[in-house]
Image (cartoon, rainbow, N blue to C red; front, side):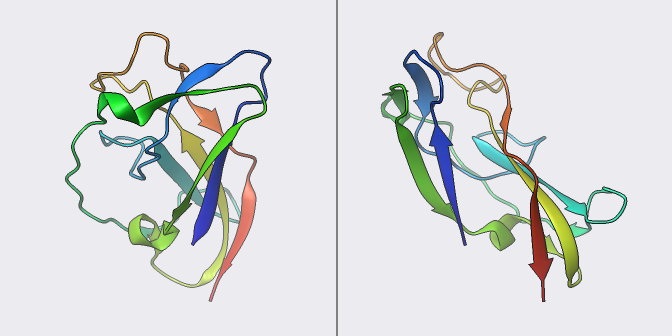
Length: 123
């Protein structure tokens, strides 16, 4: 389990999606996705993909995040990104709430926000 935290380090409030639903880069109806990379060479890790069918966010999912405020959510990484074999990996988490098909407010924080890379050892 990971505890994902989205923190507004800016000086102005921003609108974000508090749902923090996990998925894949090229899938829809998600706010979080990851790059799980082989530690050596930074190639994408072989993972088992999970199928999911999720509705897009409701208007109540969008909230204002003030300066220095944060939202967080526990996420089961291996539900969506289960490595095919044990080993060392590098993990980068991404947040995006303005995906093309989402009915997000016009003032939503734009683009992809990425974490610093994290080393991960899978037994």
